[in-house]
Image (tube, rainbow over all chains, first blue to last red; front, side, top):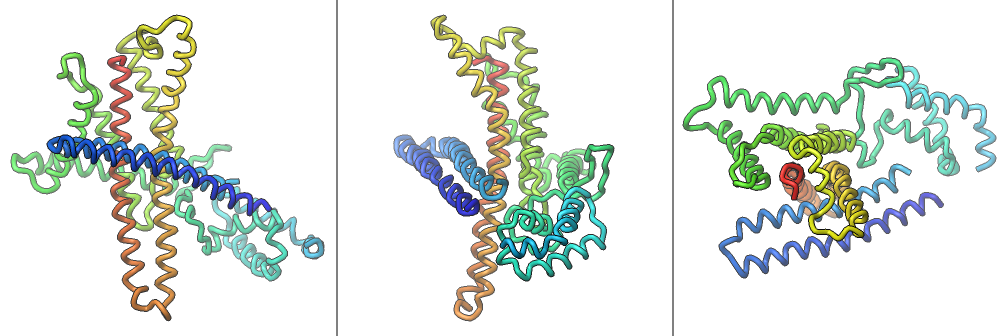
Length: 74
Length: 323
């Protein structure tokens, strides 16, 4: 019973990845838009995009951390 | 289940006693380990019925690292005491975490020392010197971009501290990528300790530079007075949350990255062992999976050190220049 509830909880925690997917997609779509408008800034913008990507990915990892906590700690 | 419990009941107290001993002592004696393995082999005959017994579960959990057949992806993060030291109830052991932190520090110091002092400092740099210069330039540019004064060209008083933080995080993260090594930054005690001390330091710097004007940090200018209490709260909570989030970010990235590498290389190993059907696919496939995972992990290791450093710079700039 507890084992099954844990698995359900960990599975439900991964729903949060939908938001992170939207976020990462948003970061890179904005990058493409901006580079299409002003290609000369491509290098600088790519740096910012990687920063934004890392920050967004970290949010996804919070969800993964919750899943691990549910599975292995409780 | 009830019957087995009754049958085994004379053994259970001793099992429990042993499990607690092994769990709380830093080093169980050889005979204790031998006895536990013997007990486990004896008891696991009817493990079908035992799997819902909580004492049995605890026992297995304790046995895992000793027995050596623990396949949990989180096993790689276990802290093992190398030189056990207990002073009263306090635990001061020299663990593998401290060993790898010392290793990181000595690597950084050695690299910088050899490049700058003896036989280094050349006008035309060799490979090592240009590596260090690259890192130095990278951090200097980053600090100059983020921390600007009113005139734009300020003496970067905090640059050494930020450079050392970056180097420490970078080397810890990269060292963790070596197989069978230990990732220091995958423990949130360490990353939170780092981020909280930096947060406290930044707050002190803010008060030092701006005096009590630093408190205006929590209230944007030109806010109507009735709104002020809410806005102060709304500014203070995210401000304090920064300390937590920058530590958790680093820890979560490192832990999740390493455990996913472990899980997927486990599946690669299973693929490699399926020799019958997938002989030709099964040979280069796992190697490719592990290689393809290591690449992004190296990227994450470097970019997380970068991101942490950028955020430290942004927070420091907020504290110095009062946005």
